[in-house]
Amino acid sequence: MKMMLVLEDGSSFSGESFGAEAEVCGWVHNDYGVVGYQETLTDPDNRGMLVNMTYPLIGNYGVNAEDGESDRAQASALLVRERSRIVSNWRAEGSLSDWMKERGVVGMDGVDTRTLALRLRDRGEMRGVIAPAALPVAELLSKVRAYTLKGASKVPLAPELIRGAVSGDTMRHHVPVSGFTEDGRYRVVVWDLGIRRSCIAQLEAGGCQVVRAPFMVSWEEIGALRPEGVLISNGPGDPRDLAETAAQIRKALGKLPMIGVALGCQLLALAGGGRIGALKTGHHGVNYPVREAATGRDAITSQNHRLVIDAGSLAGTDFRVSHVNLNDGSVEGIAAEGLEATGVQFIPLFTDDGAPGAPFAEFIRRMERRRKAGA
Image (tube, rainbow, N blue to C red):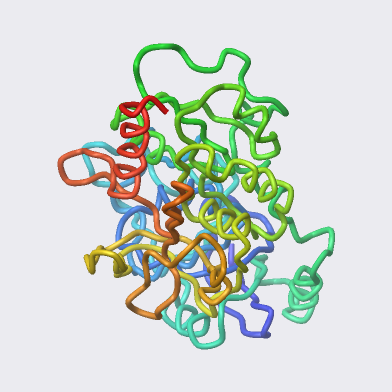
């Protein structure tokens, strides 16, 4: 079927359908990864997104049961220049097109992804609608512009996005009754806003026992489990929609080591008195250079965010800027040493030898020091 993407600025892009065939509205952004399309589609941060892949050939190594970052498809649509008709990889268990069709993800093949990428870069990320090309452009433009209205029922706010992104097991109104087992591992509660599986895997590789708690629970409920550390996870949506969660995080500051990742980092900043703004073009994909202020060390990171912490707003708070993006100077991390709280905008990745990424490794060392000190 002939399909069309219409952006809210009136521009349009044509293509052929693959995967599921449906009409869908959402926020459109570029993803600059060469590989990792399955991780992108299952990343909870991408809940409801229409993702434009800038690498021209997508789907050539298929999909498998191991590489998903969550237990479901999260993105609403995938736009590609050319989808591979051939699947060639020893780990492949099926084709990308079939996987998307089974999970209701709309695909557009043959899109001029380069022109689309440049438009989003130059004019800023925006919302769009994908629909059959037979529909009038004016009708589709009217739909997407209605969708952009702030507070409109069609525009999902962060709580709604999170509820759709996380698994049902963690969406209870209370933390698990059983809590932790006394097996010697570090007891970590994840404030689950849509955590990536790879983040949990890194904590477990570092000797942590993880209990996932839904984002709407209170600090008192989490504290009753006697955790040694708290991770505020990544997830979809605008942290400014989560004022109550930020208020609960504020109660927890200084009680035990805390780390926030992506959305969790932004919530830490809000809890500490900071403000959140938006980038014209977000950071989505890989190869983003980040410098750690204290050491001067640089790292190449994986990221997926459009909102960003206002550096100036941290003045007078307990937090300082700990990491900076070397491309645009934006805040990539914050730290409050006296509160044992840190946050990073990028997604920590396993090291080459299978150890937790540096932010998680430091978080685990804090718990280790407190345990040795008898805290």
